[in-house]
Length: 263
Image (cartoon, rainbow, N blue to C red):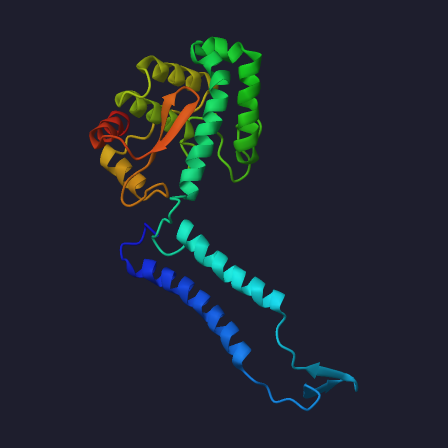
Protein backbone atom coordinates (compact mmCIF):
# COMPACT_ATOMS: atom_id res chain seq x y z
CA UNK A 1 0.00 0.00 0.00
CA UNK A 2 3.03 2.33 0.29
CA UNK A 3 2.81 3.07 -3.45
CA UNK A 4 -0.48 4.98 -3.04
CA UNK A 5 -0.23 8.73 -2.56
CA UNK A 6 -3.52 8.89 -0.63
CA UNK A 7 -4.44 7.26 2.68
CA UNK A 8 -7.89 6.45 1.30
CA UNK A 9 -6.90 3.07 -0.12
CA UNK A 10 -5.28 2.02 3.14
CA UNK A 11 -8.51 2.78 5.02
CA UNK A 12 -10.54 1.14 2.25
CA UNK A 13 -8.64 -2.15 2.48
CA UNK A 14 -8.71 -2.13 6.29
CA UNK A 15 -12.43 -1.41 6.27
CA UNK A 16 -13.19 -4.23 3.82
CA UNK A 17 -11.27 -6.70 5.99
CA UNK A 18 -12.94 -5.68 9.25
CA UNK A 19 -16.42 -5.43 7.73
CA UNK A 20 -16.04 -8.96 6.38
CA UNK A 21 -15.17 -10.33 9.82
CA UNK A 22 -18.02 -8.45 11.51
CA UNK A 23 -20.41 -9.70 8.81
CA UNK A 24 -19.41 -13.29 9.62
CA UNK A 25 -20.19 -12.73 13.30
CA UNK A 26 -23.54 -11.18 12.48
CA UNK A 27 -24.38 -14.05 10.14
CA UNK A 28 -23.65 -16.58 12.87
CA UNK A 29 -25.66 -14.62 15.45
CA UNK A 30 -28.78 -14.09 13.35
CA UNK A 31 -28.76 -17.62 11.97
CA UNK A 32 -28.91 -18.85 15.56
CA UNK A 33 -31.74 -16.50 16.47
CA UNK A 34 -33.89 -16.98 13.37
CA UNK A 35 -36.82 -19.40 13.76
CA UNK A 36 -37.96 -21.17 10.64
CA UNK A 37 -41.56 -22.22 10.18
CA UNK A 38 -41.63 -25.96 10.83
CA UNK A 39 -44.18 -28.70 11.17
CA UNK A 40 -44.76 -30.69 14.36
CA UNK A 41 -42.09 -33.19 13.29
CA UNK A 42 -39.42 -30.43 12.99
CA UNK A 43 -39.40 -30.48 9.19
CA UNK A 44 -39.68 -27.47 6.92
CA UNK A 45 -42.21 -29.07 4.62
CA UNK A 46 -39.70 -29.45 1.79
CA UNK A 47 -39.75 -32.97 0.35
CA UNK A 48 -37.63 -34.43 -2.47
CA UNK A 49 -37.95 -37.80 -4.20
CA UNK A 50 -41.05 -38.62 -2.19
CA UNK A 51 -39.38 -39.34 1.14
CA UNK A 52 -36.36 -36.99 1.51
CA UNK A 53 -37.43 -34.32 4.02
CA UNK A 54 -35.57 -31.20 5.07
CA UNK A 55 -35.09 -30.97 8.85
CA UNK A 56 -34.69 -27.76 10.85
CA UNK A 57 -31.91 -28.80 13.22
CA UNK A 58 -29.53 -26.27 14.78
CA UNK A 59 -25.94 -26.03 13.60
CA UNK A 60 -23.62 -28.55 15.33
CA UNK A 61 -21.67 -27.09 18.24
CA UNK A 62 -18.35 -28.23 16.77
CA UNK A 63 -19.16 -26.37 13.53
CA UNK A 64 -20.05 -23.18 15.43
CA UNK A 65 -16.86 -23.55 17.45
CA UNK A 66 -14.71 -23.87 14.34
CA UNK A 67 -16.46 -20.85 12.82
CA UNK A 68 -15.62 -18.77 15.90
CA UNK A 69 -12.03 -20.04 15.89
CA UNK A 70 -11.56 -18.87 12.32
CA UNK A 71 -12.81 -15.40 13.28
CA UNK A 72 -10.46 -15.24 16.28
CA UNK A 73 -7.62 -16.46 14.07
CA UNK A 74 -8.38 -13.75 11.47
CA UNK A 75 -8.32 -11.01 14.10
CA UNK A 76 -5.08 -12.35 15.57
CA UNK A 77 -3.48 -12.59 12.13
CA UNK A 78 -4.42 -9.00 11.27
CA UNK A 79 -2.97 -7.84 14.58
CA UNK A 80 0.36 -9.65 14.05
CA UNK A 81 0.85 -9.42 10.27
CA UNK A 82 0.15 -6.85 7.51
CA UNK A 83 -3.42 -6.89 6.32
CA UNK A 84 -5.13 -3.76 7.58
CA UNK A 85 -4.04 -1.27 4.93
CA UNK A 86 -0.63 0.18 5.80
CA UNK A 87 -0.55 -1.37 9.27
CA UNK A 88 2.64 -3.48 9.46
CA UNK A 89 1.47 -5.66 12.33
CA UNK A 90 3.00 -6.27 15.76
CA UNK A 91 5.64 -8.68 14.43
CA UNK A 92 6.83 -6.27 11.74
CA UNK A 93 6.96 -9.07 9.16
CA UNK A 94 6.96 -8.32 5.44
CA UNK A 95 7.54 -10.36 2.32
CA UNK A 96 10.34 -7.96 1.35
CA UNK A 97 12.00 -8.46 4.72
CA UNK A 98 11.74 -12.23 4.42
CA UNK A 99 13.17 -12.04 0.90
CA UNK A 100 16.12 -9.93 2.10
CA UNK A 101 16.78 -12.39 4.94
CA UNK A 102 16.74 -15.35 2.56
CA UNK A 103 19.06 -13.56 0.12
CA UNK A 104 21.45 -12.70 2.97
CA UNK A 105 21.42 -16.32 4.11
CA UNK A 106 22.10 -17.57 0.58
CA UNK A 107 24.91 -15.04 0.09
CA UNK A 108 26.50 -16.16 3.35
CA UNK A 109 26.32 -19.80 2.31
CA UNK A 110 27.76 -19.06 -1.15
CA UNK A 111 30.44 -16.65 0.07
CA UNK A 112 33.10 -19.36 0.65
CA UNK A 113 32.47 -20.70 -2.85
CA UNK A 114 32.86 -17.34 -4.58
CA UNK A 115 35.75 -16.30 -2.33
CA UNK A 116 37.89 -18.79 -4.22
CA UNK A 117 37.45 -16.80 -7.44
CA UNK A 118 37.43 -13.25 -6.03
CA UNK A 119 41.21 -12.94 -6.15
CA UNK A 120 41.72 -14.67 -9.49
CA UNK A 121 42.33 -12.73 -12.72
CA UNK A 122 39.61 -13.12 -15.38
CA UNK A 123 41.96 -15.23 -17.49
CA UNK A 124 42.34 -17.79 -14.70
CA UNK A 125 38.62 -17.75 -13.94
CA UNK A 126 37.90 -18.50 -17.59
CA UNK A 127 40.22 -21.52 -17.38
CA UNK A 128 38.88 -22.85 -14.08
CA UNK A 129 36.53 -25.83 -14.69
CA UNK A 130 34.51 -25.21 -11.51
CA UNK A 131 34.02 -21.51 -12.29
CA UNK A 132 32.96 -22.27 -15.84
CA UNK A 133 30.55 -24.95 -14.61
CA UNK A 134 28.98 -22.46 -12.19
CA UNK A 135 28.66 -19.85 -14.93
CA UNK A 136 27.20 -22.41 -17.29
CA UNK A 137 24.52 -23.44 -14.77
CA UNK A 138 23.64 -19.83 -13.97
CA UNK A 139 23.28 -18.98 -17.66
CA UNK A 140 21.27 -22.12 -18.43
CA UNK A 141 18.93 -21.55 -15.48
CA UNK A 142 18.33 -17.83 -16.00
CA UNK A 143 19.18 -16.83 -19.57
CA UNK A 144 19.23 -19.71 -22.03
CA UNK A 145 15.43 -20.01 -22.21
CA UNK A 146 15.30 -16.78 -24.22
CA UNK A 147 18.80 -16.18 -25.53
CA UNK A 148 19.74 -19.76 -26.37
CA UNK A 149 22.47 -21.98 -24.96
CA UNK A 150 25.11 -20.12 -27.02
CA UNK A 151 23.75 -16.62 -26.16
CA UNK A 152 23.12 -15.95 -29.85
CA UNK A 153 19.38 -15.63 -29.37
CA UNK A 154 16.54 -17.06 -31.39
CA UNK A 155 13.47 -15.77 -33.21
CA UNK A 156 12.03 -12.93 -31.17
CA UNK A 157 14.95 -12.89 -28.71
CA UNK A 158 18.16 -10.83 -29.12
CA UNK A 159 21.69 -12.03 -29.77
CA UNK A 160 23.86 -11.19 -26.76
CA UNK A 161 27.16 -11.67 -28.57
CA UNK A 162 26.86 -8.93 -31.20
CA UNK A 163 27.40 -5.19 -30.80
CA UNK A 164 23.77 -4.19 -31.34
CA UNK A 165 21.94 -2.98 -28.25
CA UNK A 166 18.36 -4.19 -28.42
CA UNK A 167 15.75 -4.36 -25.68
CA UNK A 168 16.96 -6.89 -23.10
CA UNK A 169 20.62 -6.68 -24.12
CA UNK A 170 21.67 -4.10 -21.54
CA UNK A 171 22.57 -6.76 -18.97
CA UNK A 172 26.32 -6.58 -19.48
CA UNK A 173 26.35 -2.77 -19.57
CA UNK A 174 24.14 -2.68 -16.48
CA UNK A 175 26.53 -5.00 -14.64
CA UNK A 176 29.47 -2.74 -15.42
CA UNK A 177 27.60 0.46 -14.52
CA UNK A 178 26.43 -1.12 -11.24
CA UNK A 179 30.01 -2.12 -10.45
CA UNK A 180 31.23 1.42 -11.18
CA UNK A 181 28.50 2.87 -8.93
CA UNK A 182 29.44 0.40 -6.18
CA UNK A 183 33.07 1.51 -6.36
CA UNK A 184 32.11 5.18 -6.26
CA UNK A 185 30.31 4.75 -2.92
CA UNK A 186 33.01 2.53 -1.41
CA UNK A 187 31.32 -0.86 -1.63
CA UNK A 188 33.63 -2.41 -4.21
CA UNK A 189 37.35 -1.98 -4.88
CA UNK A 190 38.11 -0.22 -8.13
CA UNK A 191 40.30 -3.07 -9.38
CA UNK A 192 37.26 -5.39 -9.18
CA UNK A 193 35.43 -3.08 -11.59
CA UNK A 194 38.28 -3.50 -14.05
CA UNK A 195 38.15 -7.28 -13.60
CA UNK A 196 34.41 -7.29 -14.37
CA UNK A 197 34.95 -5.13 -17.47
CA UNK A 198 37.70 -7.45 -18.75
CA UNK A 199 35.58 -10.54 -18.14
CA UNK A 200 32.58 -9.07 -19.96
CA UNK A 201 34.76 -8.07 -22.88
CA UNK A 202 36.18 -11.60 -23.09
CA UNK A 203 32.66 -13.01 -23.37
CA UNK A 204 31.89 -10.67 -26.27
CA UNK A 205 28.96 -8.96 -24.51
CA UNK A 206 28.25 -5.34 -25.43
CA UNK A 207 29.07 -3.03 -22.51
CA UNK A 208 29.24 0.56 -23.87
CA UNK A 209 25.77 2.12 -23.46
CA UNK A 210 24.32 4.52 -26.05
CA UNK A 211 25.25 8.14 -25.44
CA UNK A 212 21.72 9.25 -24.68
CA UNK A 213 22.70 11.63 -21.89
CA UNK A 214 22.58 11.18 -18.12
CA UNK A 215 19.27 13.02 -17.71
CA UNK A 216 17.50 10.79 -20.21
CA UNK A 217 18.98 7.66 -18.63
CA UNK A 218 17.83 8.85 -15.20
CA UNK A 219 14.33 9.44 -16.60
CA UNK A 220 14.12 5.87 -17.87
CA UNK A 221 15.33 4.55 -14.51
CA UNK A 222 12.73 6.64 -12.66
CA UNK A 223 9.85 4.77 -14.33
CA UNK A 224 11.33 1.31 -13.72
CA UNK A 225 9.43 -1.24 -11.63
CA UNK A 226 12.15 -1.14 -8.96
CA UNK A 227 11.18 2.42 -7.98
CA UNK A 228 9.43 2.65 -4.60
CA UNK A 229 8.01 5.85 -3.09
CA UNK A 230 9.84 7.91 -5.71
CA UNK A 231 13.24 6.37 -4.86
CA UNK A 232 15.23 4.35 -7.41
CA UNK A 233 16.43 1.09 -5.90
CA UNK A 234 19.66 -0.30 -7.31
CA UNK A 235 21.33 -3.70 -7.42
CA UNK A 236 24.89 -2.96 -6.27
CA UNK A 237 27.90 -5.12 -5.40
CA UNK A 238 29.33 -5.46 -1.91
CA UNK A 239 31.91 -7.88 -3.34
CA UNK A 240 32.26 -10.15 -6.34
CA UNK A 241 29.39 -12.63 -6.08
CA UNK A 242 27.62 -10.66 -3.31
CA UNK A 243 24.91 -8.25 -4.48
CA UNK A 244 22.66 -5.98 -2.45
CA UNK A 245 19.34 -4.37 -3.39
CA UNK A 246 19.21 -0.91 -1.88
CA UNK A 247 18.00 2.68 -2.16
CA UNK A 248 20.60 3.91 0.37
CA UNK A 249 23.16 5.75 -1.76
CA UNK A 250 24.17 9.38 -2.40
CA UNK A 251 22.25 10.97 -5.25
CA UNK A 252 25.45 12.62 -6.43
CA UNK A 253 27.11 9.24 -6.93
CA UNK A 254 24.28 8.09 -9.19
CA UNK A 255 24.42 11.30 -11.22
CA UNK A 256 28.19 11.03 -11.62
CA UNK A 257 27.96 7.38 -12.65
CA UNK A 258 25.31 8.06 -15.28
CA UNK A 259 27.25 11.03 -16.62
CA UNK A 260 30.39 8.89 -16.96
CA UNK A 261 28.59 6.25 -19.02
CA UNK A 262 25.83 8.07 -20.90
CA UNK A 263 27.16 11.61 -21.60
